[in-house]
Image (cartoon, rainbow, N blue to C red; front, top):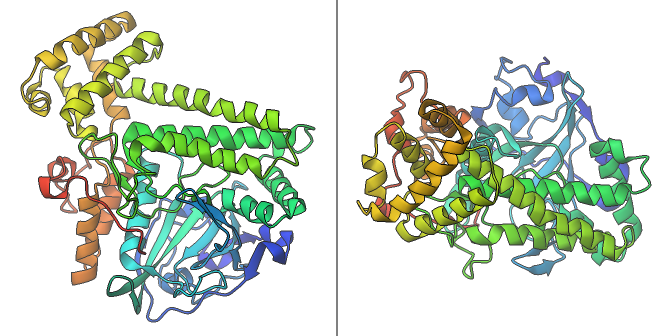
Length: 492
């Protein structure tokens, strides 16, 4: 492991040339303060997790440029809420480069909120501290759940007030990702009629992220297939845990299927298929139950940029794989949540019946599955309260469920262990995130950020002890009534 000044930078994106980015140094931030450092993510870039943090505020604010870094702002376009916008790009974030760890694996090292670039469209190039806290926690929440996501390395507050709805403090989050190349990077060059640059970008992605395809004559088809399948699995994971991304624009979709750009995201509390976590999404384009189809639509738009490389009928064949991969991944995840391993037609019927019940009674989505596990050991009270003591609505479903359990021949203890390993006790509920933000903003108390991070690292089990003031029952409780369905603004 290395100290921070000896990270092994590679800058392969720079080699694509100036048409793909603006070379730009971060804008120095005033009085930077290190709020959080994620020691669990540090090894991803070969950084010693026990490294001295005294210099970190300067590094993670962009005030101190690391040796070997070549910061740049990527140019890209994208479909935002279904409408093409050619005027995008990294307006407030910079890719410092790729950093290689001791195993030879690379991660992009990216600062979000580090000042203006030529793509910022007149804005200040900063991010709010509140949005930076949410992103820092959101990435780690999905990682703890075992879903594909970018990672958080550090969170810095800077002594500047920026203006959104009102003046508020600014923050910078350090994001680690396998790539920052988005669907929108391809769209930018496609819609500006530069297919040769689309080809160069595709070759770059294949060479560095799908190296097994480089020599294959069908490498572009296989590359697109990889993107389709990775995206399908990512969104199936979202649906299984009740995660709403909130702003699934094509510029927020990466080529490797990592959950990317945590803006107005949210975890569903009471089950509501039409859950909308983004207050700006007035028409519900990105509602929870729309996410699978939006993923497919975004992949279709990416496919349009590759038509000079892949025949149209081949593109359609590969896109058709999306539903198959999504359905298989989703069914397997839902089977695990129910303690089952066989996801066949009988299971699909059971699952459809379950979702009808959930929609009718709207229990807390996360806690329902934990209570269902408890019911297999005789503790049925909480589950019945979710259904307002209307046991008749559950009886037929339980008969079907028990038949599927019988054919797998597993005892109750094993089933409960399976279920609790697949169903989190803790999720990043919006009101808990807001509580951490309020403490940070109003009292300069950042301890709640660390408490939530500790819980979200292993959301399936209680913490080992309560030395940090963590009350498991408080953090795992249903969302209180005033905060249910809480929406978040895009403003950051």
